[in-house]
Length: 151
Image 1 (cartoon, rainbow, N blue to C red):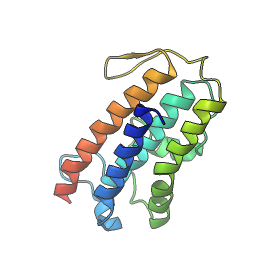
Image 2 (image 1 turned 180 degrees about the horizontal axis):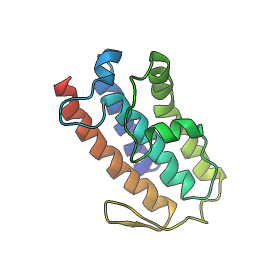
Image 3 (image 1 turned 90 degrees about the vertical axis):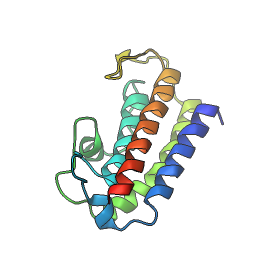
Image 4 (image 1 turned 45 degrees about the vertical axis):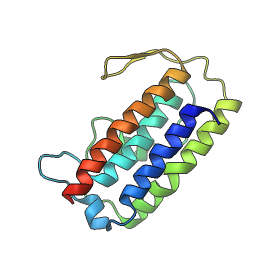
């Protein structure tokens, strides 16, 4: 496994560990001065990785379109997520890394669509997308650490 995939996997394990002892109510709570909650952040990193890697890589996005829409950039929680939604998110947090690792070996990501991120960096290939995704997920993990103290 490549180092960027190890970082991705560990970041997601850290997210799970951070949320492990919280109730569904705590995961759904939007702290004062925030626009989203812990559960949304976890769903968001999954959706974003799918869009950055598969979407820009001109590959079909494996996850359902309604999931991507609920958690993509610019979205926010409109209602409390159910226990079933949280179970699904937890199950996909690590499995999407496994699937992506396999897809890197079996799919052709060479027809990557260039993309300038809101962070100010330009992504030119799948390797850069994965590296940027790790920065993005680390940023959200940091936000989640702050949120965890607020719930």
